[in-house]
Image (cartoon, rainbow, N blue to C red; front, top):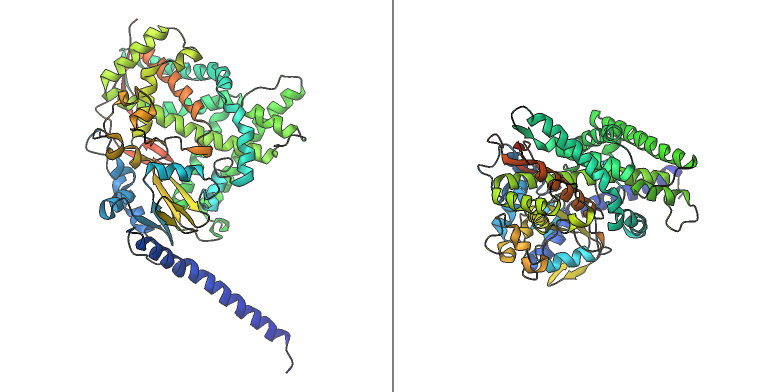
Length: 514
């Protein structure tokens, strides 16, 4: 029997349809049901799998409900508001639970020892595959894996060494002084005034990064932050929805705007990079900041860890985004908590005045401020900038007594663990900085459950940068002002990339008389 071309095409099409159908069935039904059975056999509990969407709709609904009104009081027990679906799941099923991220179960891991193991085994537990639209908004070190991550991390490490931070202190100081002078003008007539400090701190972090990491001012970098912020606001709702393959190519109004913003951001970053390259060609000495390190590698073609100019732009962009969010949120919650706890505000001010008087702080002196450091650690414990960390299990593996099959996600709520009374004591949800007076290990009874900057090889590369900036800003504020929480303040912690005050942070500033 003669085999015609059309019969071959039909046969191939049938094979393709069957193959695709089987792949889809595995994705939406057989894999989820197999994973669910494996987890339930180990005592894990959660909602039954619901086709394709899993718990996504419930999670979105509970998040919207939680954000519809502020908390009734300024309480640090904000877990039900900031992670409402996770709180609901733990309440119903206990800590040994799982949730459905579409067709993939997210296994709750809340034992500090297991969390440290997961953070340490970076090849076995990798960052989850993200909606491709997020890669337009944020790529670089944060999302890289394997050899490429190792190369970029090795390249960037020198830019964040403590010795380099000493040289960045004048930039930190100039940016903070500018903000404080603005506040001084606002309170000049009456000696006190209500200020929503959140946008000011956001701008401060942007200015610090522009000056210290890229040698530019906020005027130059400000437009980049505006565009990145707009891009993130557009992208977050899409990222939280079920991903439909190829959707990013559909020319919707949002998709087109995200891509348009990306082009504009990269163009502005290239202007800063080209300006620096031209200055070096003209004989200027290369700078020791982040951009200097990146450009040196890019220019040296024999360098073992050289990266492309496009990768330089990506790293600049992610540092603008991550660096600003981490420090501004740390500072805003610090001012809110010190506004409430006047005794700790006074203790911190006394330490600062004893160390520096009204003079500018030096790098060594900043690192000796025990009370200030305890306060910042306690703020990070109660209000960690990232409230959770998720990882994909890349191969079948056992963590403690838990067997995790390849393909599932592990979910680690940093917030929940850092407020766990079984680890931190019955006062775990209270603001008590002196719990850190004898160090981190003593504060956690040897369990080392402080994950505000992550853990292991992928611990936040900018943690020292953020802490130095926060210490300096807090010192300069305490030297000039006392502050109370405004009666108009509405306590509403909400996760918007980082943990932020949803309705701002109005503070009553009072100028100190020296």
